[in-house]
Amino acid sequence: MANIIQYIEESYNELVHKVTWPTWDQLQSSSIVVLVASVIFALLIFAMDYLFGINVKFVNESPDFGAWPGILGFYYEFIGAYKIK
Image 1 (cartoon, rainbow, N blue to C red):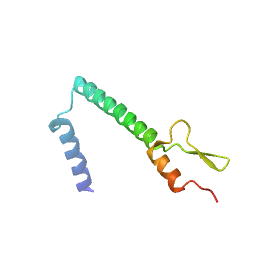
Image 2: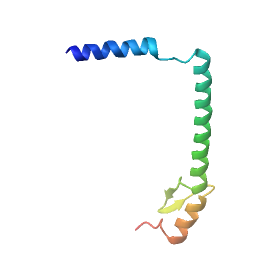
Image 3: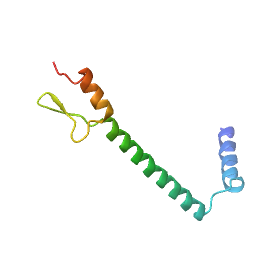
């Protein structure tokens, strides 16, 4: 039990006296960087989904790609991967 109390005291001491915490301005700038990177990655994933035609719907047992089937959509239709038995 003494080891647990000592561990908690040392952890508290380190967090209060030895850790350098970021300033409010640093936190805001880091948050903006994370937000911008998240938006860029989301747009990239959206573009890849749209390009490769991940959004295939089946209407009357045949694939309906909507406006653009994507490269994989053309390939899957060519090899007959969308045939329903």
